[in-house]
Amino acid sequence: MRESYQTLLDGNKRWALSKIQDDPEYFERTKSLQTPEYLWIGCSDSRVPETEVTGTQQGQLFVHRNIANMVVHTDLNLLSVVEYAVEILKVKHIIVCGHYGCGGVAAATRNNSVGYVDNWLRNIKEIYNRNTLELTSIVDETARVNRLVELNVIEQVRNLAKTKAVQRAWQNRALEIHGWVYGLDSGIIKDLHTLYDEPEDLEPIFRYTFEE
Ligand code: CO
Image (cartoon, rainbow, N blue to C red; front, side, top):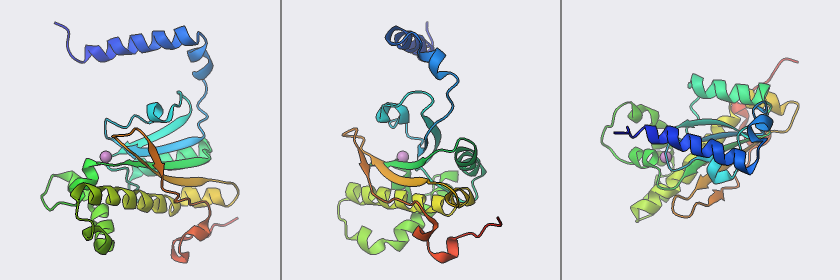
């Protein structure tokens, strides 16, 4: 009997073959192209495959995913990805893409304990707490979670702007941070128009000064 994981390896062979059938040079052309213009920070959710939903090819997106697309200032993994993307790969855009119906965001609105993820999602509770008035006025629970999904993306965009890697880049080049939300039921991404592209977008206390 074939193990279920084998279907992934079979699928991979079919995928590689179809790529070559469409474009015989595909892998030859893209294998040495690690020059992405975009850093994508998304949720670990299995329903949001970033290259597929953006119609991009290998080599175009540098990717970091975690539960609820968080930018936590003590997360060495995230900070390494951001610094490498900004300073070495010199991406021009960073995209934080959440998604409606996010289980991580929904979990943060409840009071039961799940495990380590409680700590991971603590920052979302802070966002909820700061926006209690707006959020509690939304009666429908799904709509309330979805609004919190948007507020969370906006907060994570701000958190990126607070990083040294981003602010150092802003000293001498353009770098834009965008907040998006993907719709599981439509497949469409909504731009929240929460663009950060200069230190002045942040309150003074968050701005670093750098030695020349
Ligand atoms: Co999610």
